Amino acid sequence: MVVDARALADGTVLRAQVCVIGAGAAGITLARELSSRGLDVLLLESGGFQRDEATSALYEGVVEGADYPSLTQSRVRFFGGSTNHWAGFCRPLDRVDLERRPGIALSGWPFDLDSLQPYYERARPICGVSTLANDWRLFNERFETGEALIDDAAVRTRLTQISQRRHFGPQYRDDLVTEPRVEVCLWANAVRLALAKDGGHIVGVDCATLNGRRFRAEARHYVLATGGLEVPRLLLASNDVQPEGIGNGNDLVGRTFMEHLTLTGGALTLGRGADTLGLYYPPGPQIEEVIPERGPTAVRILAMLSLGRELIRREELLNTGIQVLPAEFLPLFDSSEMPGRVQALARWVDGTPTSVLGFVRLVGEQEPNPNSRVRLIGERDALGMRRIALDWQFTRRDRESLLRTMQYFALELGRRGLGRAQVAASGFVPDRLDEIGPLADRGALDFKLGMGSHHMGTARMHASPRQGVVNADCRVHGVANLYVAGSAVFPTGGSAPPTLTIVALALRLAEHLATRAARAQAVPGRWKNKSEA
Ligand SMILES: Cc1cc2nc3c(=O)[nH]c(=O)nc-3n(C[C@H](O)[C@H](O)[C@H](O)COP(=O)(O)OP(=O)(O)OC[C@H]3O[C@@H](n4cnc5c(N)ncnc54)[C@H](O)[C@@H]3O)c2cc1C
Image 1 (cartoon, rainbow, N blue to C red):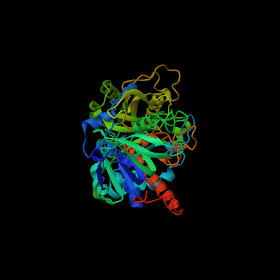
Image 2: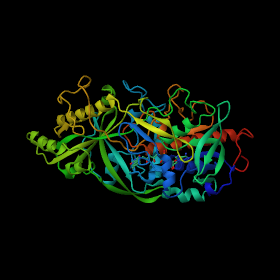
Image 3: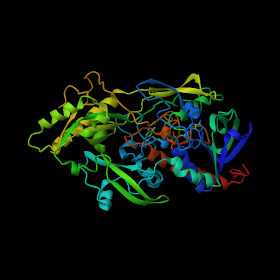
Image 4: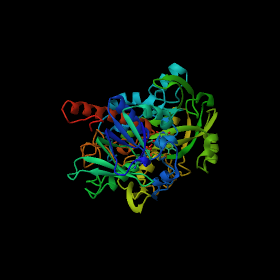
């Protein structure tokens, strides 16, 4: 059922067992999964089914710190959220990403990769990619998609699957609209989470529309699924009971904002023909598979390299994806110095028939840094809510890790006699290229970094409220019935694009809420259904 919030009478109260705020990848997944488990859901969405200028303007904010696109460009505010624009790249996190890593402060998820695997399996078809795990061998066996260039303990090949039917809005709109257990409330902006006087639970969500209506949503449980920048905004803006904002007793909300760092890492020459690199070169092989609930679905796959887990841990590196691209892609990226270097590199290779010239594109993890953050500013939007400033910061380790990953990759390539690579990070060449190891005393590492519109870490997950905003169940510490879905909860970001993990975590959260509901139902009066709530 769909409700247009603009037509509600002032003071209306909408009720359900679970109120999900935000209909992006996380919110849509939660609403579908919770309803399939028998729970009544109210899905509040700021926009309609199409983009709308005034609604999009609610996302405006200020960019401070490192260069970043405007906050309306890097996210989308209508039904389907940023999946209305995303590129559909899906890859699970690596095992090392969830581990507590030596030298990386604040690293470590409260569970390991094995605990996420069952949810990744279910998340893949939801995102429109193959049910096969992202392992090149499985695809090669079944679809003859090609062999890996390298895949061993030091340098690994990982597949990214690229969804071709990826926009969650059009894909799942009909499911939700016709599902009797779901009420989709469009044009409904959550402007305040109403916290009980004792701070222990949420009693309602105050909502507003751009045509001036004010109403409330009430539920047994609330899930904030408004994206990595808007989650901290709502938590911080809901400050009438706790002046520092909800879940912010330890000043963690909005901090440790992380992105994926993108750059050209250097030039490359390989002693193999381009015809053997089909797995790595865009657009990558296309396969077709019958996917549960979606039917025959075309999916592209694309391989990326990364350093092995032991090397990453031993060298205290951040995890970085290493993409091998043919030279003709270079003009697409910002690296004016590269063509000359590629040519020079080709001349260095002795005795190897250098049939492929190319370059490396890196996608780097950022270390969690409390100074990289989202905060509220004085300026207000059309609904009276304070806007945010994004102060994106890099650390020296962020940059150094990219250079050292590229160095190790070059070394491993040469050792195997596969080719040569030269570090030139967006044109920046460190002094002593031949020396592998920490670059600590070598002066400024000044090179340009791009990003992926991936907003992570602003309500991080940790078992302790001193180190995390939410616990391992994604529940806000200290608040019995408030949860967060989305990449805001990622304690670290790895190098994989976030949405497959967002969907996996949403499925995990739905299971948790359904279990809580079932337990509560066993106690009379503790969990009412929609008509009784
Ligand atoms: C250009 C681009 C390319 C991308 N490519 C990829 C990719 O290839 N792979 C990948 O994994 N990721 C990619 N991403 C990121 C991906 O889109 C996000 O990770 C994903 O959409 C996040 O899902 P979400 O549900 O957490 O948040 P969102 O998609 O941001 O959804 C949040 C929803 O909440 C609603 N909302 C916000 N505030 C309120 C409020 N106050 N009240 C009610 N509703 C509200 C919004 O309208 C929106 O519908 C890309 C992003 C962009 C912009």
